[in-house]
Length: 307
Ligand code: RUB
Image (cartoon, rainbow, N blue to C red; front, side):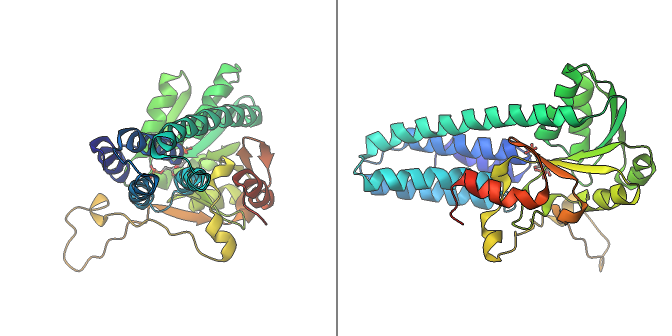
């Protein structure tokens, strides 16, 4: 594999590249890089090189369907063109073009989604968020551009503190933001008007898989009658959940939580948790704000899955 591709894989694993959309974008770019630099003279060899890259990328963060869907779409494109008789050189060029189209579509979807989400933010609102979602921060920055007045409480998100990235990004955009520890969520929820989080994976039941702690925040929101929205492109749908396969929840190194725990103390570090669809007021997507029950069929249409 190309050295830059190996670096991308390392950066995804270490969270230097974090957030579902950034991960998906980097994976598409890595596939394009691998194709561009391949010396394969035969289509079958190029395909198997790219398969190795694709599987290594998919395995770098297991709970990331947006990445899997994007690079699987590339593989399907390659298979189709191989059947049509394309040669290795053509395949390389075409895959790079295909990747550029995917990246453009991703950007356009994100812009539409940000607009729909920004409309949802009431004036003078207090918005509570968790972790760092580039989709959620794009919504908040769009709302600011629309001259809405609001403030944000960002939960710090143990153990890797992605809430600090959110707080810094929003402050840089001139948004009034306060960082709190995760355990303070209830205190601020009482005053919140809306919760806004991102999404890593959406199941066929419309359940949300996002950064660990999201479920607790959704339950608090319900307790205080606060609307709870997740910003999720339709490509975050996890197709295998349609066939009864559970989305795997990534379990990271316990040392991220406590590097030298006392003997006999077990430490667990699940990266994500599942919020049941019944706690979700709506998903903010590139098609508009939709109920969790509609996510599956609209996503299946978009991803070309036959149902
Ligand atoms: C990030 C996280 C984000 C989603 C959505 O987790 O849970 O809410 O990935 O992000 P991690 P985006 O830091 O472990 O990757 O909206 O940018 O796709």
